[in-house]
Image (cartoon, rainbow, N blue to C red; front, side, top):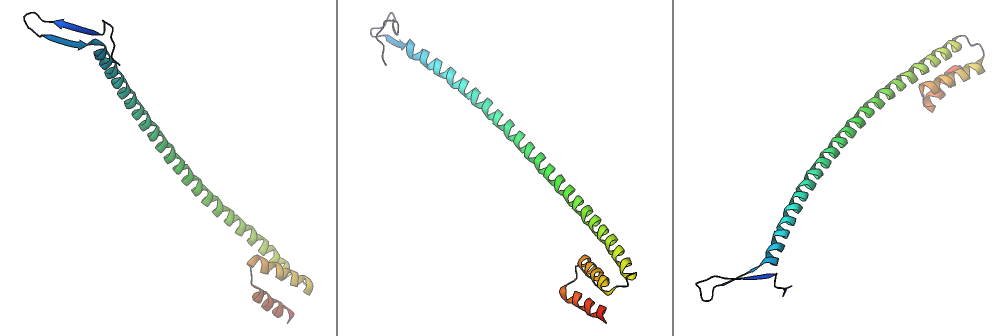
Length: 140
């Protein structure tokens, strides 16, 4: 908006010229200076914000990498523990199988012998056909 106050517009008369009038709008120049300062401040703020965004992105990538490494370590640990568990399970099954086999060797009763053979078949995970063959052989 144009201002009509006498302070906002200054007219300079240069002696020796007939129509030498130079007009300067002081208010307009002040606004330009103010806007330039705002632009510089905003550029600085934007630069700082961009640096902060880069720092946050770097921190996020670092956290993601740490998370990925931790997940891989935990997966390796799970694999190791599963292997140990499987080994211990096989080891305990072998101990159980050994005890059942010893009982089978000392068994005199055919009904007890049949139960022991079923237990051995379960530990060895024999098929139905294999169990029938063992029962058939046991009856002979």
